[in-house]
View 1: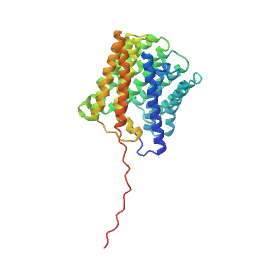
View 2: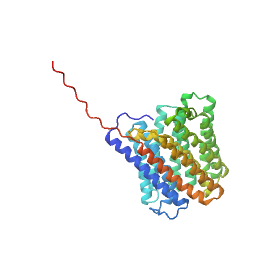
View 3: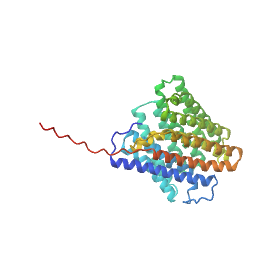
View 4: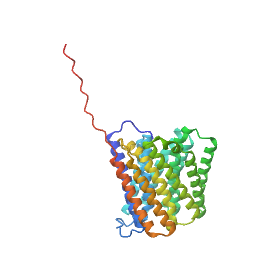
Length: 376
């Protein structure tokens, strides 16, 4: 991600504020998720909060975060309107304003982010920019469906497509240095077309669209495991190795979630639905966040980060807690599902704490004094 070398105080405040709003969206989203999971003793805080778990995570956190990253990358000030509108929509939804106000703002914000991505296609026509733009379009459509009152599982499938296409596009960009074969690119294009087709079908025949989308996600996961540059970075050591391992682990979860979508195509609620969605939204997406946060946070905040092996602790615990949750879902083991979900939240909070405490603000350097000429 290209960033400006100099950042004005006002722009830095805007970035910090938007990043803080994304984290607030994450906190509210996780709280809502725990209530929906079965931790009924937790206060709902806001009447609409439990019903907003999906929109808060997909838009209020991930949408604002991705929109902010794109705005920083382009360096265009108008691009910040995207994540700002999404954050405003989340606030309106939490405040309980008239039905449709919050989703309307979120849809408008996602449209701005997609326009930013479309601008990248115009500047650099390439498969990876087109893929990310299609991801943005999927987000807009998913938000619009939610706004218009379509069933939330249909919108959630489009949100899933948004995240998978956005991440796959970014990874494809980095894999260009490997000089991919024409055959590998054809497979990627085929998976993308299949995914778009599955999403469109889901709006007409949900079960069939879910199965087709799951098959497309599986092809994308296998493609990333085979062709992504992460495999070649494991031996690099340090932060590069951590990033590579986090990415590969996320691709495995994407494959697991894809198989579950195909196996349980048509479900809209319950443990099987929970297992399929969170294998992708938690296992895949948050593994990507863990991998990129040590890069994105310093770029957005313009503050250096010191990497340490502490970052491995939440990464390992994320997968253990998710195995507990998904295993509980599939085996009907309620306690494992319940505690696995709670551990998911604790692990994410621990990762945020490690990331923030690893930031090292630059010390203010005193002005250099011009030495006086030596007396002759």
